[in-house]
Length: 244
Ligand SMILES: [Zn+2]
Image (cartoon, rainbow, N blue to C red; front, side):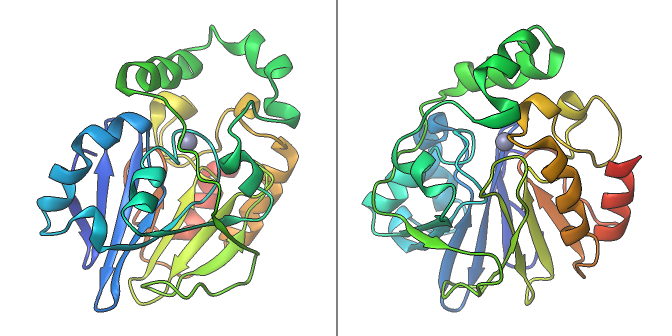
């Protein structure tokens, strides 16, 4: 995805060939879902201008989790006046970025650095600009909350990739943002269709598997992931693909 590309009415995807971020535009304003890599700041103004917007038009940035490839431009949008929102369990990692925990801690990740998926995402991040977005005054939410930001997304807690990872359902737009609870990019999953992120990227890999049950029954025309193409075959089929 390069973008901005209108995926369904009012929903735009942007980013690079490996990392996505999204905008939801409605009468109330603009909500950004995830904030990509730090290097995306270089084209932030130009990207928004292409759909007739500026950073100051962004009302809120809602983050699916605190990984650095999802937080990059959050400080820039915060500085331009946007609210930044994240699950309470991932807020500390946004305030003070650091290594992941659990199954994705350096002890588990480092022996897997040679793997193609790891080299692909790390190489791409370094080339693009991997400085994590750091925000020290984000607002926090919990699973089940309906956020008072444009689009009124409902929060579905999907722990696993990180402990505070959440999917966000925009009912009006019929779009479910799954972050890294599902991955649609074959360079990362090493497979076709929807999959889970590699286990050494998941803070609790068992929880990541279990969280698929929270996504499975969701009614949405399109699933939008942090990595890979839009999925238009429904949540149940995406989860079935990931379980195979
Ligand atoms: Zn990611």
